[in-house]
Length: 345
Image 1 (cartoon, rainbow, N blue to C red):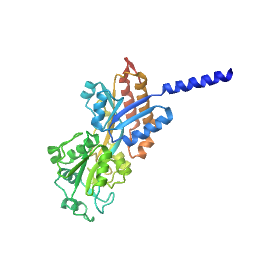
Image 2 (cartoon, one colour):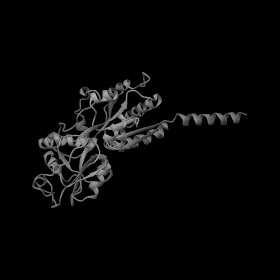
Image 3 (cartoon, helix red, strand yellow):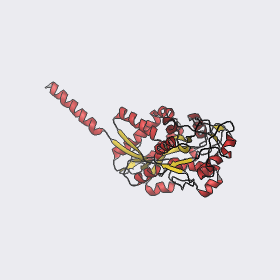
Image 4 (cartoon, rainbow, N blue to C red):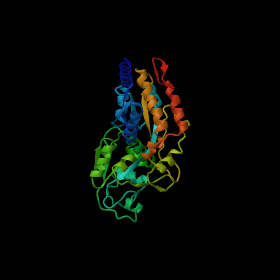
């Protein structure tokens, strides 16, 4: 009888445990996907909660969270306070990272090519269309540059990585600002251009096409072993992308001055060691959660990520949010409710 009761109790505990497991679905920016997938895997091991995150681009993430087809959305282009209010959403940053120009140029290894903002803008405008153009040769007098046509690789989906990259080009090039501007999707002016979906797609295009140049979040350049260029920053110094140069740019961010939703530009920050193309990536959630247990579990996941996932972020060359910003973010979670009752803390 004792054995039967023990088995029954064990069975009930197992059923209870399975029933308590939650599956959370998110979608959006590909910029943080390498990190979110690692966080989700580890969190599942620790808690049993399953986090599904689809890398579909910031535009898709915004559309899906507004349509309530996912539990949270991801975007690298933050929504305005007005848009957040109109959609009943909260928004908070998770990590910061760098966007880098990647290249496939005959005879040129990673970090060997040097570019400044104007020349990079002129390449993507189609005004500089060969690798031995005088503008590039002037910046690289010691490199043997081939007389090879430049193919521009860009995103075809609505992309926060595109927003960060084009925001930089608009900041350093009046011509880019006037002709193209900044946004998740722009009309790419270079005639010799190709598109790819997600950071993955652009990385694949650059790797496959000789003479190509594109832009991706840094982890994709490393994972795909694609050469990347150095850039001249606002201080007039050539810097290579790394967590140290991303941190140097992020150090200038004053999050206390960020508007509702924590939208803050990290583009072209001052400092000798600052990488000029840095941005934060954001999570979007509905303030009113139809399922209290699931809503609380989403917040518990990101609380865990902030407190336990920093080393994973650093290993993938993302910059974790400072503790004081995490405190500000978690204070904002008091807006998330279910049936009028706050879900946090």
